Length: 259
Ligand code: 13P
Image 1 (spheres, rainbow, N blue to C red):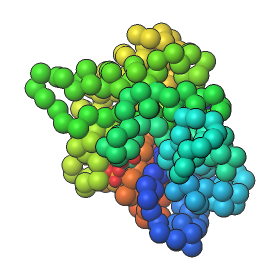
Image 2: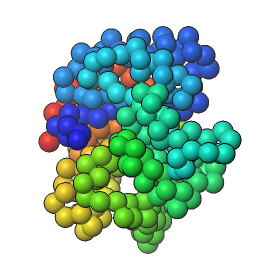
Image 3: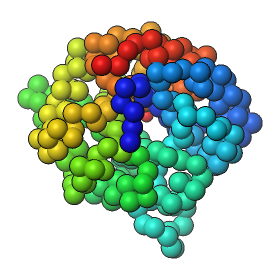
Image 4: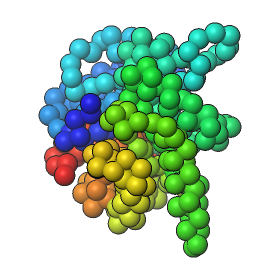
């Protein structure tokens, strides 16, 4: 089960860096800080080609590894796909499911649901990504988010919710600068909304489900988003590709006590 008292900071390297040497140096830089922090669980999600080497190189408890995607079938003729078992065997204990960049390439709510089920069956932890592309006055984006959440968790048992992290990543805030991220107050509203949807379905079990935020998290906005946004941690994109910047975010998370 996840230790919810620790902050969860996830590095999503996306399709970076371009060589194993560069991946190795980036990880070495991050490891210096991440391995020492008592109150942060760091999860590195590199491209699948680097997963085995990186995960093999680290034996401690403070850092884990995750994949950026899986396919829902267990095995067979699915050229180019990677199964939950295969990424587990390569050292991943976590997997991102439903990232907006994958949804933009055609992944549907049904595909996301199948991936959630496949990951949980393999005893992986799921990082379920949800997020609206834009906000409208009438609040339709809330229905959209509810639908993303409810469809992905359809049939998921309360016991398996313990291995699920919800990553709220509004698409309009991804890949910009810290100033374009959501404000802490707006983030807090979204956390309350997501928690309500979870509690409606899972009652008390959902009280501890970690809800994290992604979308232009940088060292400048990290503290405010954690403290006033009241999230359990972050899913970090571009700032996780710079070991110094990412280490600063990790240190801020370590010093900002989880509730
Ligand atoms: P940025 O931190 O680059 O905005 O990316 C967020 C993201 O998509 C992480 O999954």
